Image (cartoon, rainbow, N blue to C red):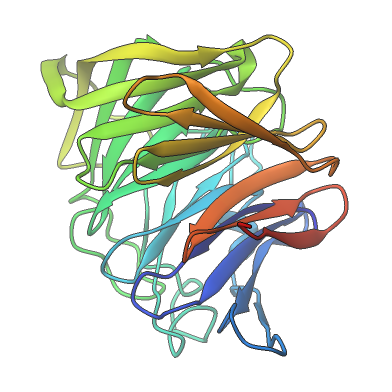
Length: 306
């Protein structure tokens, strides 16, 4: 139902998760397929007890290698009070915790509120993620620190690093997805509002100064810069989805479902796939097969290699 992204859980083979946008009144939901290789698909549809806040208009999800995952929230204020109180949320991969009663405020493990209109997210390691900050118009690195447990509210060990030299622009409500390479040295980010793909060298990160706190207490809030370059740019390509497989980067066009494959060694385009599916949002790869969802058709698709 208006799916915005998909990702595979690295701790359970073939387990695919999809985020649904939801509404302003409900918040987002998830659909989990336990085994994408099964002959007959089963699915597990869930809505967290307070997805209205913690999963408000989810634009993307990303799994960490520890099996937990995070979502970016595509809203200005998750409290709907005219402020800017929103940002990425951390969730448990434990099926006995996620979207189950916790005795607290929903089942979320953590949330930091410094990036309204977060349009994409990528996992670095454990509880550290990179976020497309559509409100402040730059890329951020979030480290949730130790999670506070399901439904609790202690966020003051969180770290937000703002890479203000990497200027980005959101593309309306269309997500701008992000991925990291296997050794977590390069971040690839779609800059949807500027119709381009960025390649960011995270090892070049350089701290500039401390920043004042916004919305909540943090362990650190600071301004940084990093080296980056434009990997691809095309004003006629509505970049949205992104997936990586070794040295090949796949990017999808939200408007017409075209997929481009870029060689990350030569930076040359290797080829294109014309799916004809409008509303292509998330892309993901499992066992060398490419999967994507369509916001327009409310469907999951698989492209088989021949």
